[in-house]
Amino acid sequence: MKKIIFFFLMPVSLKLAKYTDEKLIVFINNVLISIIANAAIFVNTQALLPAMKTAIKNFSDACAAVKNGPAGSAAAKDALRLQLETLINQMAVSCWTESVNSIDTFKKSGFNTRKPFEHILSLLTPVKLLLKQCSFPNSLQLTFKAVEHAVYYKIRVMLTDGTVVAELTTTDSRKTIITDLKRGEHYFVQVSACSAKIQSEWSSKVDAICA
Image (cartoon, rainbow, N blue to C red; front, side):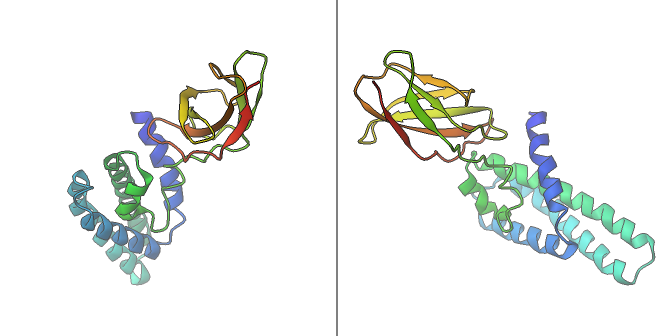
């Protein structure tokens, strides 16, 4: 679990670094509004609100003090910003946990305001799919481009009417043999990239006739 959380937090911190102090304050205040408005979804996250409000106030006051304060004010402000970013990261993970791995639900937390998290809490949809004949009987061979951060891939096999006739998983994007097919049948295949908590959108369909 520690490795998964670190994977989420590190890219988020780097992304937040691109915000000016003023924009960071606006962003997190918008997040708080969304979380409070969706309290029924983000139940446990509510416990983080008092600390977050305090951190925002302290950071806002420090930003104001820097304009006319002594030289040391900037260092104090930077330290408070780091504390605020840490709380934002914790709140993002808390909201994601309560979203039951749903990007759409997660967006209700307000973290999609400027989308600093979605790029690392979602996976790209697999592309460059190729479905072709292979040497194994009643089988087709599938290849596609690997997705960064994907741990494995889900594959679904359908008939022309959309009926799903097989579902399988693979870790090999370079060569997956889909077996137990019927000769002469026209099949359609889609792929979705997955990690410990995330699943991408399903890819576009590719098709082939099992010879």
